Image (cartoon, rainbow, N blue to C red):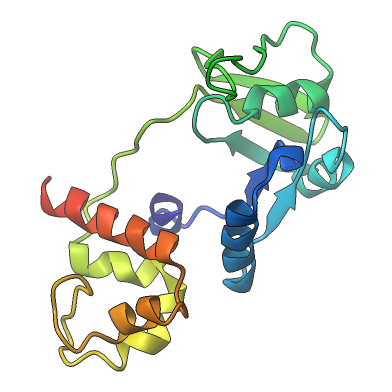
Length: 190
């Protein structure tokens, strides 16, 4: 989301396999919703949410981006009804989806909608932004940053940090904060 935000590309989250959703995932989705991020939940297996997704995509050129095995190609296959799209079953061993898509391909969903299906992403390179700028893409930090002792607080090692205090008080999602810390370290080690 940081990469898309930096490039001014509009985005929304699609969560496939909603039939496998856990309480932890539901809590994280609630966090995204509270930040004003659109979340569409689907299940190809239950044929649930597909119409809502198709309506959201209508008239757009979109890219499906995400980890391997989350059901991107299954969704595309259901949306464009193209039998040539290869999908794999869930692994019996890991109980997760399998990597199938090996290259990006554009599909016509209807005359006004194009969908690009991509291989699973392990990591993305971020544009040249400083570790201090990363916090600008975590909306939930903005109010609590005012309580930080230092204007240039990175919210990791500093004492008297409003953001870290908000995480401890569960006012900011721990998962989101951990993603933030990971991004800061990645940028700092470029």
